[in-house]
Image (cartoon, rainbow, N blue to C red):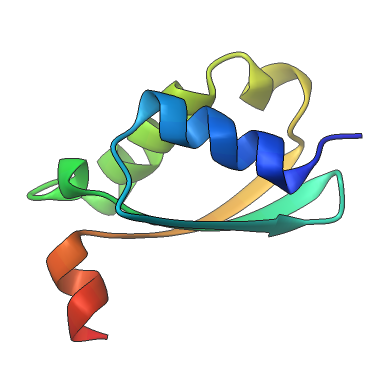
Length: 78
C-alpha cells in the first residue's frame, strides 16, 4: 500500500514546492501542490510536471491522483 507521505517525498524531490499536501487511502490520492515552476503554465502542463516528478510510480503504484496546482502568488491570493 502506498503511503501519502511517500508520494509527498517523491513530488518534493522532483519539483520545487513551497507548499504540498497529499492525502489518500492507499490507492486514491488528492494533492495540493504550490510551486513557482507553475508560473505561466497551463493546468495540463502543471499536472505533467507533477507526473514527471512521480515518474514510474504513476504507472505502477498510484492508481488515481487528483490534484490542485497553484503558483505561490495564486496560493497567497486564496
